[in-house]
Length: 473
Image 1 (cartoon, rainbow, N blue to C red):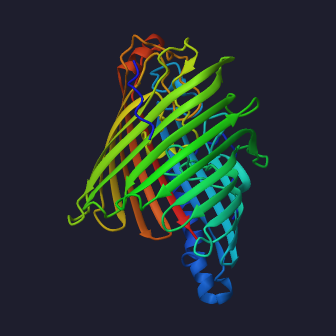
Image 2 (cartoon, rainbow, N blue to C red):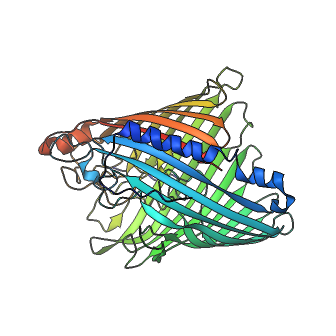
Image 3 (cartoon, rainbow, N blue to C red):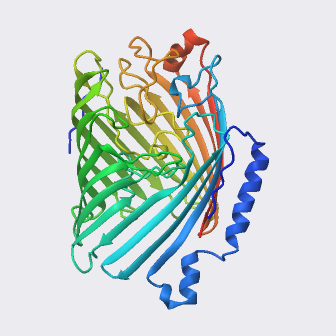
């Protein structure tokens, strides 16, 4: 049974697909080439130009080059999630190199007027996925006009292609870990003064189409009102929001009219003597199509986190714990869907770096320990456990339909424990515009996965490794 709902409160690099180079050699060569080609600029481009001439004071020119190599063993979660953890009879290993280049130009001719444009080129080498989600040749990432300045007048307007980022990005985020980050064609009106900020927006998410100009999903409207204040309680950021997703036939998702109301509370840095906390709760109502039938929507989710940082201890260690819950569908025949529509999140930050899970049909306790041995080095150890909130519902990946097939399905007699995941991440940032990152993850299959895979040859754990270099200019 579900737990009760909580109260609502630059050049393109385009090698042919299918080429699978020696991973270490390819990574080292490409990352070295990236570093040497950009570090010659002497640092961030804006600083250099403004130092050379005051005429560039109103301009913003720069970009980013990012290269990442990933290896998955027994984890093929993006295209065929039903193959995840299968011991035999399925090709669920994958390794690939991702390269992303961003170049932007912005101009502020007046204190109340700004323009911004950003182009992106995303390339992928060796990915087994037929859709090749990491590839999207030269395209427009952002292009917007901003009219207004809260220091002069409380109302402003931002219109055009842009990123929408709210809260911790559990529901609305840029998904920047992806080689093709998310953007929206949107109109956003903001009221902002020293007490409160209120955003009202209407948007359509931009659909990725490699080889064609990326256009918005014209059948999928996403609108909302998002209110934020740091004065209601002086030690926390308090946010309330109402969101609406209305999609019709032809959209990337099945037709739906989903209405979400929620709140988010988060402590402000330095206000609680080393302690911090965050709480977010959402409730959803509306309806959606499923299997040709229109179902009522009645879902909810919550996340609670707290931590402590030893600021006067060498390495500034921090320990935090978190618990996330999202309802599952207790009866697929009752005309009601209790599975959350998690909208447009940045999943990678929350439910395991290996990206096997999302905020749907989930019990998810988590513990994170971080350490900075020196100022430029960060180490993070992250351990999470996963239970299905209801085994009458499916085991969901971060996005898309639930796992169904290859042993998975609605299995109410199975134990709900899906497994656990351990991740270790390291980051080295020797300069403000240069960062190296690497990480390893291991997913330990639980009784739910083991039972699901018993009829197709059994289950096995999954492993993941990545290394990444980011250069800004």
